[in-house]
Image 1 (cartoon, one colour):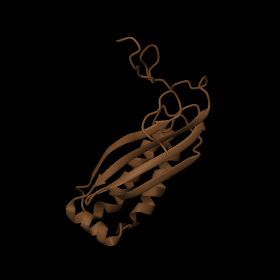
Image 2: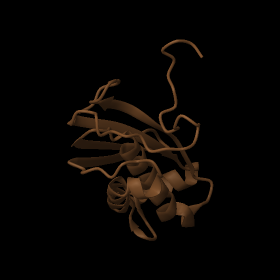
Image 3: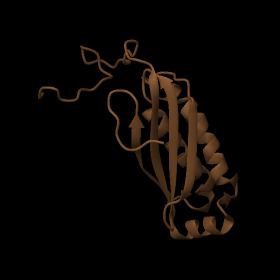
Image 4: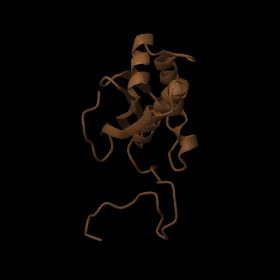
Length: 163
């Protein structure tokens, strides 16, 4: 391996899975933004646009925002090596990206020793899963993704623009 090459952080010296010890890291303000897309078949997208994003199960966007927010707060219960974090803020925005796709963005903030990228990704993807659940009665050819981190701030490495 090249000198100073990135290494997997969730493995111990013997190569076994392990939670990262963050006790020596400074407490700093940290935030992350992630997104996930939901692409609908043309007829489903047209029906959702006509209905104002209300489906047979009710208000799609409102339900997805609640589900994504709950997921952010429970990320450590879903992903084995995520630390439980105090969530200082969570914002989920959902809007049309194009004629057939919704864009779901989740922004999360904390003041802690580790970042919130996983929380932002979890919030965006669970909101997308909720949209699928709310809309599957209209058709099962709904596609989720891509999901990705857009930006992070705090800790050793920042990238993208947060805020």
